[in-house]
Length: 289
Length: 249
Image 1 (cartoon, rainbow over the protein chains, first blue to last red):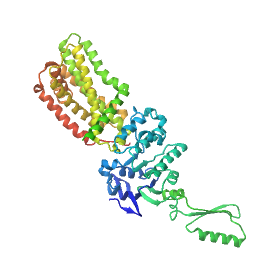
Image 2: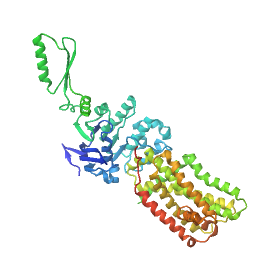
Image 3: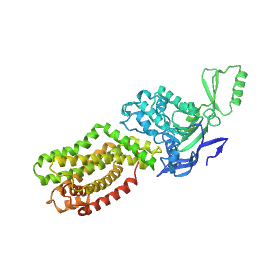
């Protein structure tokens, strides 16, 4: 069932995915394909449909229509053979409060055919010090690390991370990013959702910007700007005012501006050309029209 | 199949460990029937006829509190905390999960019934139960019936804060009507009819036969039939409409 796109195996294939809740259409035709070994981010504001998409892929929700394949399986069938190969970090989920992280990991390890070593996973997420503390005494950040650990204990090929660092302080976020990068190095496929631009930019090989149940743009964060947003050319004019102009064709605009300035015998003070950043694209695409 | 059994056993062991680590749950589970027995025993001291009713009545109450009440609470709590949703995302088969949870409840029922039998034998002047088969049958059917009704009832409870109100709104009236009808021959006919149709008094009747009179299962077939109907209803609706996650809003 796994098809081939540019030579790489496909971990997730989604075609025209739609989800309707009564009157409300949460997803209006999502098309995404995630390659094996790729870190793919769904970036969008709250309520864009990121979690709905991910929870359909995880097998929690039924789609209204469309085609979905996760590691060659239809997730709606909830086959155990698929769940053995995926790890899930939900946006929020609890854990038994009376057991310790080590006990939880050992118990969870029993669900999987080829689990990782519990001690190794504890150390990977940085919970070795808290391994024998009841989970109800863990801080929010420590619990989130336990979420990661429980998702990793089965040694999954594909990992879903739904807003993995929401509510983290900057340092904890960077630590989490390092963990995610180490998973990428191990060759894991990662689908993450986030509403933090920086997170998508730093972690993802490719980003899909989602709004109102649609994908507005898709591509590597570095290339996503091209064709979507405008280059910004800024300078200070003779009166000292900052002028900013947007263009799809910076070469032509610069030629005109510099030509005119030279003809007038002036300089363009503080001339700069800014390539559109992911942020520009994101803000432009998700702004209310 | 052996693998499924092993997974069920692991879940059961975890449930037991968590049960003992939650002292208030453990205390209420075992202290409550003892407290009722002690209070009832003190009031009815010397009245063997009444004590013969008290012991199986407390036994019936124990079956209900360890299954119906305990499971409603646990499921709503785990659902609201998101633990059920997390488990749903793992390859652990649903049957193994619920097998472990149910076995944990059955263990608590067995321990409580054991306490009630011992108290009956050594404190309240009863003999050992004359009919162990009937005891086993009524505890088993009572557990299946009231456990599945507990799971079903958890569907109706909107959030954990309101669980106590919801559970007690069922548990206490059922308990009082059943006690009243079980204890008093002079209770009005409609009270007897209601109690006979609810799933608690039939358990008390069966336990009374098993622990006191030794009248045999054949004399409580109507009680078994009522429990069987409730169990069928409970099992169907425990599975249908089971929610693994908290509805928002």
